[in-house]
Length: 177
Image (cartoon, rainbow, N blue to C red; front, side, top):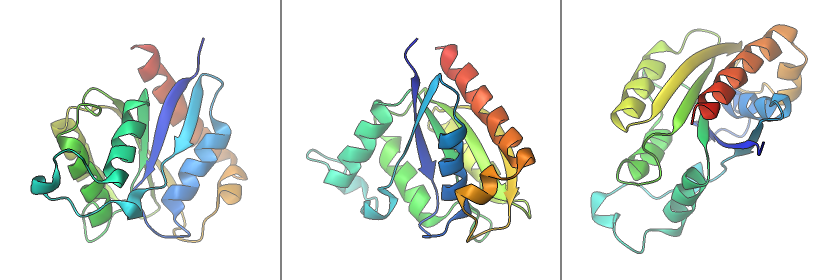
């Protein structure tokens, strides 16, 4: 069976992001049935303006939509900022609202906050469902915050177990398609 393609989206622009580190660790733990790829274009997306949602789309938006279209599922790790979804990630989602590539995608949400990022997670869940994503599960893998790297995550058996449970849910969601 061909591995299911999973696009990993980090909602953080930080160089030393715990959310990005979590996705990088997930790539290393992915079972044989999943091929995880990390999207790195968040900072290149222009601010969303409905007037600009015409052909030709900005190159960064076209690349994002093509990456979404080429994926079978999404794995999202997004921080909370001021009790909400960070602006850069909301901007990414806004560029996908009118796309044909996004609706129906299975999604697993990862929450890296050790203090409980429940406002952003609830808002993100609502936004994704409004956009017709199929949110399967939300898993919290508490990390210490910025500066956490994939090696530290992989060195923790409990964190690896939590990530593997999330990946199993993602594999199950893609197998149902």
